[in-house]
Image (cartoon, rainbow, N blue to C red; front, side, top):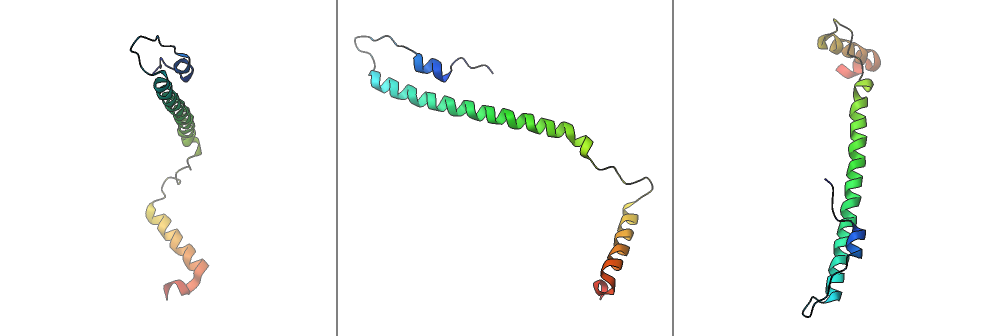
Length: 97
């Protein structure tokens, strides 16, 4: 996506004047607004590119940061049973009253 126009190109653009041409002040004012929009678009694009790079790096690093799966043979039932025993040990019988 290469753009042909830059804010500097728009600012420096010269138009020929004719006998019944446009009002130069109106054209200049409009071009100033176009330049402001281009600057905003370019800043937004750069921000999005940086965010895109950051997210891609996070995605590449994600497999390295994942916690290893529980050892083989451990099922959800075993985990729940261990958790229940831990709760009983920590909270005692108050939890089940």
